Image (cartoon, rainbow, N blue to C red; front, side):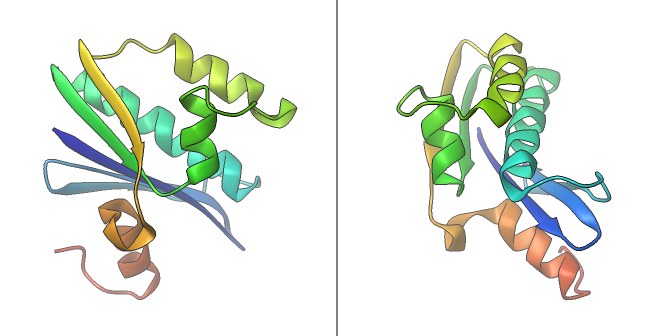
Length: 123
């Protein structure tokens, strides 16, 4: 199962979206922070969603290249995000679990956030 995730920062604060099974879950007004923090929160939420759905084979897809690389151990996690990395690492995962970077234009979660910002319906 593909699960898309995206985080963002707007003047009102951080937000994220997770799309699983064609349904978008959007959480807004997460308070002050950064876009990188919002991306970590989105990755954490997507991983939790996979576990809650009881999935066995999961592919997480996000467009934040830095977060995906950090989570996959390809680059160093900056000190500001070590706690997010630790929280994510401690989460249970399905037996088959992969995390990949995709282009922004392919990210259904990012598209869902964009539609919300434009005042358009998600479906």
